[in-house]
Amino acid sequence: MEIQQGYSYHIRDEFFDRVQDKYLMSNKENGNYRPHFYAIQDKKNQAFYWMIPISSQVEKYKGIIEKKKRKYGRCNTIIIGKFARKENAFLIQNTFPIIAQFFDHIHTVENKPVTVHNELNRILTENLREVLALHNRGIHLIYTDIEKIKTIMEQELKNIGYR
Image (cartoon, rainbow, N blue to C red):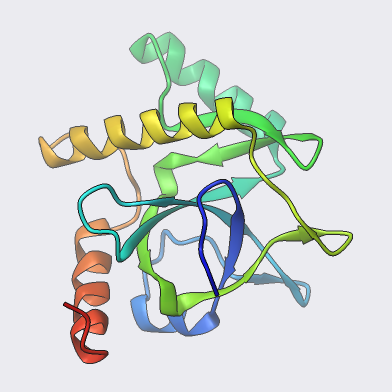
């Protein structure tokens, strides 16, 4: 499967079984694939993709955004944007790295892949890079253990002979 930025994807159960991070959003709900994740390819290592969970619980996250804005003056960990003609919350605070072998399938509506508008893609990419840069400076705004997950993904790449 070709993985392209601008689309969202579902992830194989195998990834969640392998990683075992309590802050990852569960993969299935009532027999349905949920959630789906927006993919942004890593700038430095193109074998990695940063997955941003997409939530339909917009009102819940709008409240969290407002609290963060009151406390810190801004919020770059949750972005509200249109996806599949509806407002959704993009949860940069729950991002994690993954490699291609753990992608299951592209997210579709009525059998058509759903894309993210270019402007929303730009906003998500900029905010993700900013939050990752803060993480690298010791300011941890991401709930998932991205260092542990990245190490597991690097080992998976070694196992398949990726250089």
